[in-house]
Image (tube, rainbow, N blue to C red; front, side, top):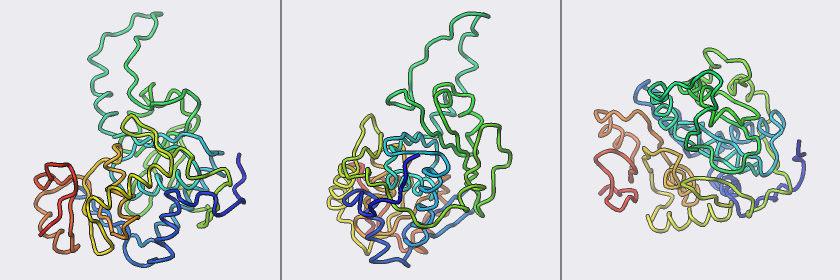
Length: 307
C-alpha cells in the first residue's frame, strides 16, 4: 500500500485540483444533481458534500483496497452521481479510471448462450477483447448491482480483477441486496473512511487519469480537454447543464463532470430518460443547456443551449 500522508499539493493542475477550487470558491451551491426516471429518485450534492464522498472513496481505494498511483480501476457503472464520485476519487489517488458502459456487458452476456458450446476438455474459444483495455496487471473492478451477475460471469472483465466492488446505487445508501463471495460491498464499507483525503506525492498532473475511447489521458490532458470543451460550449457559472450520456466516452466524462467543474456550472445527470418529465424538469431545475437528451441533440454533438 502507498502511504498518502504526503504533499497535499501533489496533484496541482490535475482534475482533483478542480474540485478543491470549487469547494473553496462555492462549497454550498449544487454541483451534481441526479435523476433516475425509473425509480423517481432525485439526489442533489453540493461541492462540499461531493468532495466528502470523493475523499471517503479515495481513502477506501487506498487504505481498503491497497491501490497505488498507476493502479487501474475498471468502472462498470451507469450515469450516476456515484460514478462521478468514483472517477474523481480515482483521479485524486492517481488511479487510472477505465469506465465501461454496463449495456456493453449486458449485450455480451445476452449473446453468450448463442455461441457454439465448447467440447469437454477443449481450449476455450478466443473472444475479441472489449474491456478492459490496457496492460494485463491486476486491477480493481467496480460494478453496479444491476449488472454485477453479468460482470462476474464475464471472464474478460472479472478474470483479471484483484478486487471486485459492488455498488448498490441505492437512493438511501443501502447495501447490496446480496453480496456474492469475493465481492466487497461499497455502501457497507465506504462510510467508515475519513472524509478528508491527502494525495500521495507521486500523483502529479502527468499521472495517467483515464482510459476512454481507446485513448489514455493524463490528468493535465484531461483538464486541458475540459477547458477546451467549456470554452467551445461557452459554459459558465450561470449554467445548469442536463446530461444524459454514458461516462464510458470522453464526451460523457467532459459534459458530466470535468467541464462543469472548470466553468463553475452545475450538472444534472439523468438516466432511464422519461420524455414525459422533460419539460417540467427543464423548468424546475432552471436548465440552460442539454447534452445527449433524445430529441435535443445538437448536430455537432455539442451540448445544446436553450433559448
